[in-house]
Each structure stands twice: as C-alpha cells, then as structure tokens.
Length: 431
Image 1: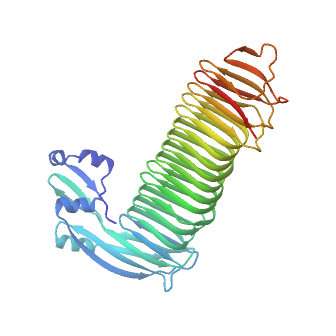
Image 2 (image 1 turned 30 degrees about the vertical axis):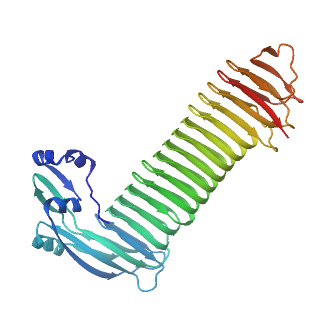
Image 3 (image 1 turned 180 degrees about the vertical axis):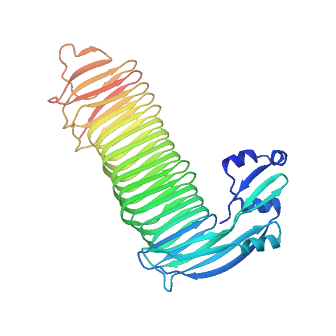
C-alpha cells in the first residue's frame, strides 16, 4: 500500500501549491508525494529472516511505514520476508539511504521483535522541505495463537489464520483480522477496521477515525466498535454488553445476543434479530429501524422515523421530527413525536404491565389492541377528531366535549393515555 500522507497542519499550509512555493512548508512521511514533487529515486532490497517464535508466543513489530501481512498456523519454519525501500534525491542518495537502513529482528523473553532502523532523508523542492522515511513491507509466517503487538505509522495490517490476543495500530492504514482467540484492540486513525471471527474474548475494542468498522462471528463479554466518520456493523455476535457508535455514519447490528447501546450523531440505526435485556438506540439525524427484536428497548431520534416490527417486550420511543410506528407483543409502550404520527399495534399476547402513553404534537395517534385487554382510557385532541371504535364506560364528567374522553374499557386496570395537539386519535380492537 502506498499512501499520500500529509498531516492536517501541512495539508492546510500546502493546500495551494503556489502558496507553498512562496511560504515554504514541511511534509513528513509523504513518500509518494515527495516522489511526485522532487522526482525522488528509490532503492529496494529484499531479505528473509528466521523467527524464533513458538505457539502462543508474542511478536512485536514497529514500523514508520509499510504493510504487514501475517499468516498464522502455516506450514514450515516461522520467518519474515521483507521488502525494504529507501528514498533519495538521486540513485546514489537512495542507495546510501538503503545501505544505512536495516531490519532488526531479535529474540525477546516472550518471542520476537521486529523494527526498521534507518534515518529519514530531508530535501527541498520549490520551497517545500520534505522528509522521506524508509519503509518495510513484511510478510510473516508464524505459528497459531501468537499474540501480536503491531504498530505502523503508515500502512495496512492484515492477518490470516488464528492469532491470539493482540493489539494492532495504524495511523494511516486498514486493519483486517481474519480469525482470533482472546482480547483484541484495533485502532486506525484513517482506515477500515474489520474482524472476521473472534472467540473466547473478554474484550473487543475496534476503532477508526475515518473509516468503517465491521465485526462478525464474535464471542466476547464486552464489545466496543466506534468510528468518527464511517459506518459501524456487528453481525452474529454473542456478548454481555455491546457499544456501537458513529459520529457520521450508520450503525447496524444483526443476529446479536446481549445488551446493546447503539448511537450515531448523523446516520441510521438498524437492528435485525437482536435480543438483550436492555437495548438503547439513538440517532441525531437519521431513522431507527428495528426488525425482530426482544427486550427493554428505548429509541430516540432528533430528526427521523422510528419503526419497530416483530418486537417483543417494552418500548419507549421518541422522535423530534418524524413518525413513530411499532408492532409486536408488547408489555409496555410509550410513543412520542413532536411533529409526526404515532401508531402502535399490539398483537395477541400483549399485556399492560404498566401504564401506556402515546402523544403527538402535530400528527395522528393510533392504537390497536387485542380484544382481551381491559384498561382505563384518557383520550384527547386539540384540533382533530376522536375515532374510538371500542365500548367505553364513561363516568359522570368523563365526556367533557367531542375532543376529550375518560372512561373504562372492559374491566379497567392500567391507564392508557392518547393525546395530540393537532391531529386525530384512533383506538381499535383486534381479535
């Protein structure tokens, strides 16, 4: 992988080449950018090293630049194959930089350590001072269940086969773990982060500054996936507690067992086949869509719709500017929209475990209940009609006008309150 790497400050200062020529600026680690401006030459050397590394040992790698590919549980002797690249203003300078660069492979008390030793080369081109650093692209063959501690300033990290509990970090690059056993910490400042399978873990912490974060086939006590600017996906997971968070992107969970907190500042929250004692969903600007879920669910969005289908349990739903709809076997229901309709359909098997309240500022409110449920009713509308298609026993003073009624349905019991400032109220039964 080759990337153009310009730190934020440098990007601002050098965004206009004309200004850069006049004022001058420093660009570091921008190897390809350096090459394009200063016509850098490069020199490449390949080498192989044996690794004294046993199953379940520890491998540490530290690079300023370069891709790392790890193949675990492979046949043969553990080893590392390296392609080392150095840069200079001409062929002689590049060769000298390469001669001064070496790959350090050494044994440690727990396994092995690899790092690249070499001095950066400074140059000037049209008023721009550039700093190029050597890079090492590594391909490793290691035993299974090795613990990896890898840090790369600029480059991708990819693992194939079963690795052990590991920590992988890249400032500018993607992270991809095919299969792991034990705790995982994955952090990329700018790149995608992906986990294919994780077993027997206490913790999974995967984060990206600017990229998507995805994980599947996860068994862990605590899971945290987050992205500042990208979508977050979790599928086929059994966990105790899960936190999914994005600042600018969608949050998606499918086939999840465990308590869940899912939130995004700008994007949709989507759930499918999720079960947890507590499900907490939030979007600043986006929809919340839940298909087949069970638990105690609270969902809110400042601007978007909330839709629940095939839901079992208790729900508390609130939208600032959008519709609220829910259908399922409900024990408790609370629905509110400042500007939108609120429609709840309680299927057979539902019960009133507590009082229910549905309200809207500027929209209709509709509730459909099984005919077996009895309750106390309070319904009102400011500017609309009451469409109450159930027998109601109204006490003296319970029917004040055509826009408000209080009474008993069946044998009474828990209280259901339906209200809207500007809209109609609908109440119906179903067998």
